[in-house]
Amino acid sequence: MIVKVSDNIISPLGTTSAENYAKVKAGLSALRRYDGLWGLPEPFFASLLDRNAYADDRQTIDEKIVIDSISKALEGTEIDTTWTRVLFIISTTKGNVFLLDERENGFPKERVRLGMMAREVTKHFSNPNEPIVVSNACISGVCAQIEAMRYLESGEYDYVIVCGVDVQSAFIVSGFQSFKALSQEACKPFDANRCGLNLGDAAATIIYTRKDEVSDNEWVACRGAIRNDANHISGPSRVGEGSYRALRVALGNLDPSELAFINAHGTATPYNDEMESIAIERAGLAGVPVNSLKGYYGHTMGAAGVLETIISMQAVDNHNILATRGFDTLGVTHHLDVTNQNRSTEKRAFIKLLSGFGGCNAALLMAKGGLR
Amino acid sequence: MIKHQVYISPNEVKVNGKSLTINGCGSTILTELYRSQVGDYPKFFKMDTLSKVGFIASELLLNAEGYRGFEPREDRAVIFFNRNASLQADTHYQSTIQNPENYFPSPAAFVYTLPNIVTGEIAIRNKYFGETSFMVIDDFDEKIIMKNLENAFQDPITKSIIGGWVDCSDEEHFEARIFLMEKDN
Image (cartoon, rainbow over all chains, first blue to last red; front, side, top):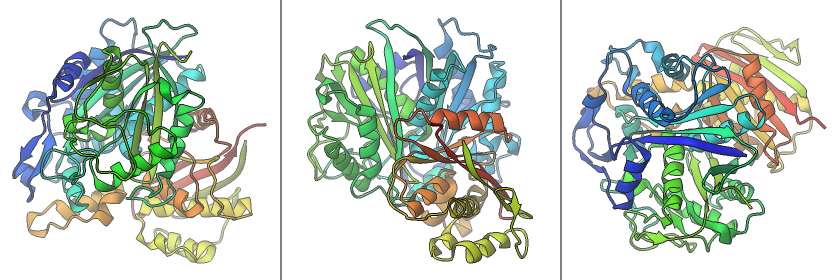
C-alpha cells in the first residue's frame, strides 16, 4: 500500500499543515482585493504570500517555498534525501514564469525552465536523481501523487517527495483576466451567484512510501485516475465526461456510503462547478457531501491538488467535513450536498477531484487505515 | 511493446525509421506535413508550435498504425515529456503584456501557455477519453521516459500509449520522438 509519511503546507494562512487546517476550520482566508499590483490595469482578488518575506538573491520565491515546505515535511522523518531511492516530483503549471518579464534580472533566465527550477530543489537536498516535473495544468497536484504511487508500486523508489507550487504573477493574472475567469470579489463555489475564481500562492508537500501493513491511523493513497474530456482545450465537457470517468476509476468497488466527502475542484467559475455537479451525479455520488476549499486559498494551481488533499486528510483526522466558504445557495443544475457550515463525520475516506485546461481531469481516493 | 515510431525535427521526418521526403525546412515543414498527411483538421492552424509538432507527429503515428475509426475510447493514453514546457507560447504571451502602451492579452494566446494542451488536442482529434499527461525533465532521457510510460500501464483501463518527447523552444526549433506503445500480453 502507498502510505503518507508526512506533509506540509506553506500558504498565506500558515507554514504547517496543522496551522493551515486550524485557520480553515475557523473560516479564515487571506483572499483580498489588489488594485494596481504588478502594474496590472484591472484589480483582482487573490490570496498572496508576502513577497518580501521570501526575497532572496539565490533562489526565486517558488524555489524557496518549495525548499521550505519539503524541509518542514522532512522534519521528524528518517529520510535521507541523498539516498538514490528517494525521488522528487514537483507539480507546477508556471514555475518561474515571471523571469520572462524583461524587467526581471535577478536570476539566470534558464531558471524559467521547469526542470532547472526542480534541479535547484534537488541540489539543495543533495538528491542524486533527476527530478520529474508534472505540468498538467490545474490537475498537476493530483497527477503528481498518482505518479508517486506508480513509482513506489513499481519498487523503483522507497520514498517519493511530492511538492506542488505556484506563485502568482502578472503573467498568470492577466491571462485569467483575459478569459474573464476571475471574480472581482471572494469566490463563491457552487453558489447561484458565483462569478469566477480567485488565484492563490502556495507550496504543499506530501511524502509517500510503500508498506505491506498499515495501522488504523495511517493515510493510504488507494487509487487515482486521469481522464480527458476529448471535448475542448479551454472549456469543460458539458456532460462531465473526463471527471465522471476519473471518479469511476477512483471509486472502484468502494460503496459511496464509505466516503466522508468529495473535495471538488469547485473553482467558482460557472462552467467548472456545473460540470462537476454533472460528473458527480453520473458517477452515482450525488448523496456524498461535497466541498471546495477555493474560498480559503483561491486556486493555487500546481499546488492545489496537494494542498487540498492535505487539508482534507486533516479534516477527516478531526472528524470534520469542512464548510465551503463563500457558498450560500446551490447554483448548479444537478443536486449536490454542499453547505457553508462545518459538519461532523466518522467516515475515513474521501475523493479529491480536479479538472483543468486541455480537457484533463483527475480523481484520487484516500482512505485512513486503507480500504477494508 | 513499441509498435510504431515517429521522429520530427526541422530537417528530418522519419516514420518507423524511414525518412519522408519533405519540401522545405524549419517551421514550414509542419504546414507541409499537415497538407500532405492530414488535410482535414483546420484547427491545426490555430495551434501553438508545440501543439502543431505533437499533433502532426501523432497523425503520422496513427496513419502508420492504419485504421482511423475515430471511435471514442478510454484505453489509450497520451503522455509526453519535454524540456521547454510551453516556452514558445509563454514568450509570445509575455510579449502581449510586456508593454503597458501595447497591452493586449488574449485567451487564444494564454491557453497555449500550458504544455499539456498538446495532449488535449490529440485527445480531442481522436476522441480519447483516456489519461493525458505532460511532464518536464531538463534533458532527454530515454530511460526515465520508458520507465514512466511502463508505470502508466498500472492504470486499470490503459492498454496503449502515445508517448515520448515533444519539445519546442521557438517556432524554428522543435523535436518530436514519439511512439505507440502497447501493454504486454
